[in-house]
Image 1 (cartoon, helix red, strand yellow):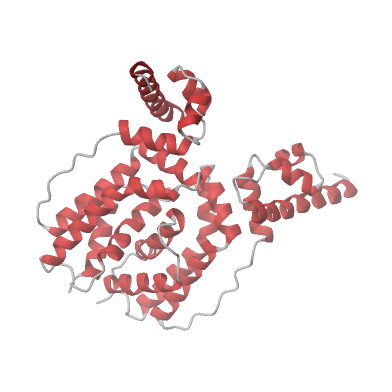
Image 2: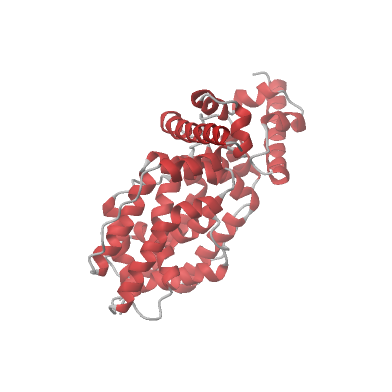
Length: 185
Length: 185
């Protein structure tokens, strides 16, 4: 591609991603259309379809590039404190409208591989905290860190996904307290 | 309504519900259309829309009336056995194609009130088992039965919803074993 065309193409790509994220926030995922994104970005619909097969992967890229960057606090080294902090962060992330909506589109399009990618950083951080707790003897040595992470995240994801009850920090704390009883001693 | 019209109306209603469930099984929820249900049931599209606003509530009614009836085994009275049986039943139910698809349509249509209704019988049974365990002293008296049910169901729902890993009976058993550690002693 000649330099000018490459620049134009890159400008279109950015305009599309920004437009998609803005419309997602304004309209919600079910009312967002590729047509509306194209109109707002000043490109043709076909330009979008050349790069993305559907709303899900488009919103996924938009979120990765222009969504909030997760600036995490350094761990305190006290396992119960750090686990609560991580699980609260996971709950807050899910409550963020754009994150929530991108995940829901992807689930609907059966792209749970991409949802898993979005959720992965929190899960990895949580497993890291669990490993630290294990080194400090606050979690039994025979506990499977990955299973323990599922036990912590499961109730949070359930409330998020089914909207059965508010996803509060207090709830995240209560889950950590309960699950830690299962993992210690 | 004169008796004949009422009979016709009832016949149409049943034909629509049966057609919806058959098409759901054959096509999956994203390819199922109201048009196709109308054609298969031999009614006009407007007849369907007169009774149901969208796919979700239609499939919900169809599943309640023509879905599998949950014939449950009597509890054994041994808490760990009965909790495992209930959690396995919950996992199997979610793995049933029509149940899975109806829940996913309803989530997509933001009708989690109806999803919750579908999931409620299992949840109630699980809470009942937890209360029995509490009476027998195998679950601490201060444990909130509703929170404990969320702890058990959360990881199962997570695997179902995100399809992160297979929803096996062994997994359900492992969750019960881990959570019981948190609830006893």
